[in-house]
Length: 149
Image 1 (tube, helix red, strand yellow):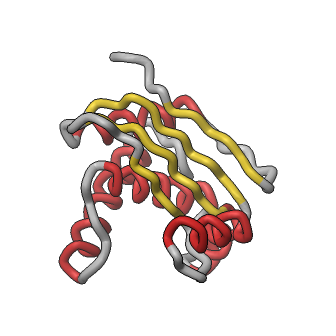
Image 2: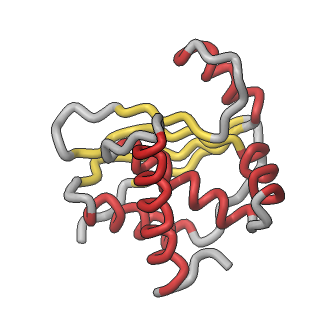
């Protein structure tokens, strides 16, 4: 298997992702399972305010969000992108959904990845499919070699 070119960065937060190698392999396996090839994928963990500024600047949305995905791919069936994730939103979501921060972070990471794979979440049917795919890939993560607990 080719080396998974998945990078992790942080902006305005000090959060350390656990089990980076397992997360890289899991995201890469998700991409391969969907019939795509990974070129490069960057996860940028950031603050609410950082992501809000991006949401305003690039999407013209004046709202807080947990994730923004930028598709930089130039070839079909190739993944190259940046996924910005608000750690503060993840922490709040984890509390709200009675989950762990690590589990919620993995859900949002795969959610952003699924956007790069062509899945949408606008409209009931699209949102249902997106949630099914998230659950499908999260199950792979937690059953074989647990990355999240």
